[in-house]
Amino acid sequence: MKLRLAGMLVIALMMWMQSSTSAETQRITSFSGTAKGRGTLTEGEEKFKINSVYINLKENGEANITLFTDLQLFAKGRWSTSDDQTKGIPLEITGGVVDGDMTGSGTLFLGSDAKSISKLSIQAKGQGGKRVTIEFVAERENRTQ
Image 1 (cartoon, rainbow, N blue to C red):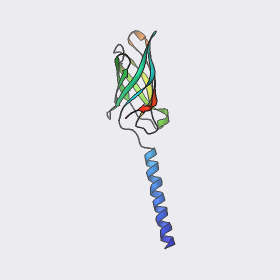
Image 2: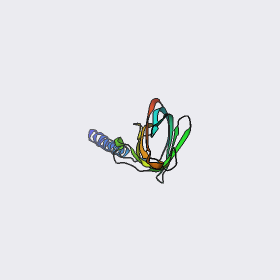
Image 3: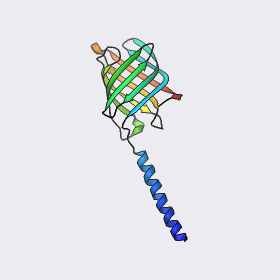
Image 4: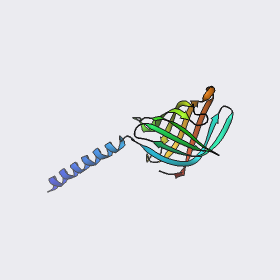
């Protein structure tokens, strides 16, 4: 009886270890979320305060980003997964924000739950070669899915 119980315990432990390992390596296939926080959008010499962001990462690799300043500013691009989620989700920016011709790259960091926005960072060039920088950090208590 003790041997049988020990065998069942070993099997249960192996199943638990396998399920927790597969959960750790799970890749994000899409994401949609809003976060309030603090940030800045800098274009050339102009600075805009960012109050919140909305990010929609689609399954087909498209990314839509809305920045809420005094206005709503939009960016679009592509996203990909990373083997190491601590390095964030790589973004390629292909248009939008101030003049529509923005191109560059950035990184989206999600919270430890992988369901909330933690941080957004983008470096790009706009029309005429103006440098555009976006830095945003979400408030912990206001992160939403």
